[in-house]
Length: 431
Image (cartoon, rainbow, N blue to C red):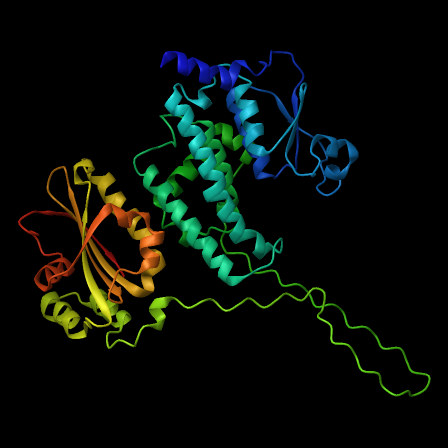
């Protein structure tokens, strides 16, 4: 194992020429507010590597010159100019800067830490940055805006942030006990979301991500590059393209027979978005149970809960239009820390957000000491658990699902304690 770790360190470090004091600075070609450039600049602050941001960079001009296109033929930024040649792609640049310092702690101290750092860098790019961009860029006019595509991007982003939130519930940093390159890349990608589109009401669903982001951006080496970060107060409106100006008709010298005009689609007219396909659950026969009425009854009943809410539920319940399910967590032996167990349940409920229109749920954390048991009750529209929930919410496979019995349903809705002879540690409702 020690030989393998040494090999990884060599690949991550010594095979790349070390920068010595007095060597010329690395030159970064990018605008001063580019979040992808921030990755290398923050890594440089932690690593003691001198990186200079090129002066007077003008997007659309500086990156179109022959000199720039020799460094990156497609003209994208950032590009790092080094004595050994140019490097493009922001994560590659950040890695180069980090590895310019021997045994840099930003890359961890073991093989598994190195792998986890790379893992979170990839996750940040493909799951966080990509989905923020799919939500933000169409609203800024950089890509066609399609409402259905935006909904899909937001759902995918929530799923990614939910997974990140669960990890950060028991970790201050992504890997180990100090800042690594993974934290730098993740924070820079989150920066665009927090600063431009992810308002407080959105990020409050992910409290551990919020804590992590504000902790990172207030670190001194981050502040040197990012300065004071402010969260967006509103979601940017969709940029509508202006209609082309009407042409002035020239005055006619004499009347002529009118010629038929060809109907042309204005060049800048956007194609109307296609109607969103209906959820299969919306195509089911109508049910006498109105889910929102049950949710209001549950929320508004403060006294005599059994006589009012429980009775009301069974009066409303339609076994032909809805189905009741128990879920039991398969790996209760892992639930040895109370707050981690509760955060695990909270993350599951966040990821269930995609079916809020069609479901009601109660999740219980049971026991006065570890290991804690996690059990739940779910009411779903239709005779089975919806397929799109099984496909999209990875937590579903972590539970055993069985059809429910009436007596146990009432006890779970009521948070009856003791529950099956054991104390309740926590109860959460999905409505």
